[in-house]
Length: 111
Image (cartoon, rainbow, N blue to C red):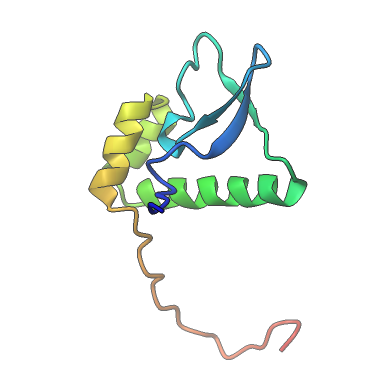
């Protein structure tokens, strides 16, 4: 049994504008955007749907970090699938470690 690569293999079920259901890889989310765009995730269960949304948001945040030069281009224009795949390869699909923050000494509502 081979390994599943969540970034490169087609595993995300989507529904297209014309009603077609298909599996795509994350970098293909913008494929056919002008003619037949993906309009929704089509997971078999609501919890899978939510988890897939979370995964895609996290992947996007990892690829286009706040200090990334590509992040400005992402806002200005949508990337084609191959450009998104290349951007992810440059980023190494790793999320940077959060910066340390100083605490003010105040306690929050729960603590």
